[in-house]
Length: 91
Image (cartoon, rainbow, N blue to C red):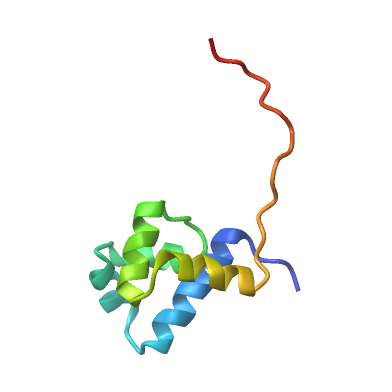
């Protein structure tokens, strides 16, 4: 099975938590203050929300933002880090 991207893993986590609350995607989007179609993109993993929207999602789920990131780590989600130094210097 192919490894999921970070946005796909995040979307799956949001969907799993929403479904555990037994609320529709439309109701959840309303609770979060985001458009239903945008929530669809988030849950599918085709869009990665800003940290502001992650905060809205956390509130809609009734959890802290950190809970979402901790749960991603528990699921084994990692982010590749670039170790190269920046190539451009600013004056």
